[in-house]
Amino acid sequence: MPSQEQEAEEGAEAKNHHVEERQKWKEKEGDVAAARKKSANSNDGDDDNENNNRRNASAGKLEEVRRWVRQQRHLRGVRTDESFLLRFLHFQKSRVPDACAVIDRYLHMRSAHPEWFRGLDVRADPKLRLLMSSGYLLVLPGRDPRTGRRVMLSRPSAMDTAACSARDVMRAHILAYETLLCDEGVQERGLTYVFDEREVNWRHLAIWSPGEISKAFSCCERALPLRHSEIHFVHLPWTMHLVFQFAKSLLSQKLRDRFRTHCNFDQLSEDGFPCHLLPEGYPGGGPTTLEEMVTLWLAELEGKRDLVLGLDEMSYVMGAGGGRGGGVAGRSRGGGEEELATAEAEEEEEDEEEEDGGGVLGVVGSVRKMENGKLGAASTE
Image (cartoon, rainbow, N blue to C red):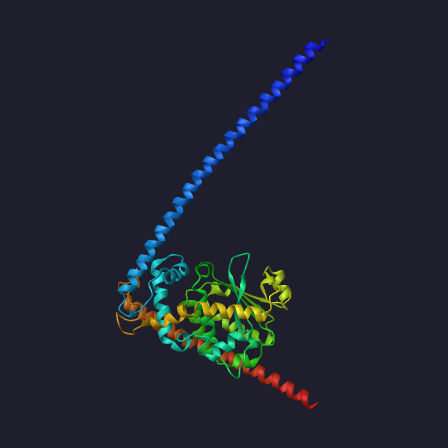
């Protein structure tokens, strides 16, 4: 049997061995940590270089767009600051020729429809004030935590159809868009919509002609540099589904695919929408009342008022510089005739859409008469 001295020596050796092994692991861990830190520093440097390269590329593209704007004789007083031009570059994912094309379409639309775009001021326009203060259209104060997007809530039943026209509604939407586009986050991420269609009836539809619907949709999709990222319709009445399908047919397939219908707000929540962003009183809504949200939205409109009204200083001069398009960057050779042909094709397309829309609304009118007949029969019983 080993003596006590031998056991003590073996115990000491084992302890020393254990200490040595721990030290080796510490050194190894230290080496790994140092390597990670070095790698992280290297990656930070790579990220910094990548960010610098991205900023330089963005600055270069901004300068290209700026140069293009200054060369267009048909564009007058156009803003060339970073905030304004970036909205078009973000919209077209930094493709300079496409961004220039959208600038041209946007300014053409502003000039062709001054009744929609000019004088967007809730102070001076009582109809705008009425639509916004009634809660017909507001942008919620919170952001969607999934995407960081702002959320627009539309409540058609809040609109006074006797006082407001399709023109007033369009002005309200464009005022909201122009206000939001002052925010680069909205330029990059786009916008989410929630349409609360409860209590919508034929009076809300009757303010629109098929031609107005077609032109409004064309403006919102093709001419405004805003990404319509998610579009939710809740409580859509069955009688409106035919009109809903007609409206969708005026849009690109890409945008159509972003439309979602929900039978109620519980389903909207189940489908992943963060209903806590909605006003108090909505299923799953937050603690902020609708009235408080409207007040916050009116304050936001007021804060961007001068920027939005300043857009009226820009103009598009028909016939100056070779017609619509004016030589969009990357498409300038032969661009005048090509752009003119495109404009004519779009007008023909809108005419066809108006004819189709007339047919659809004719069917809708028949359904309306049928419903009114039922109601009349019921009242006489």
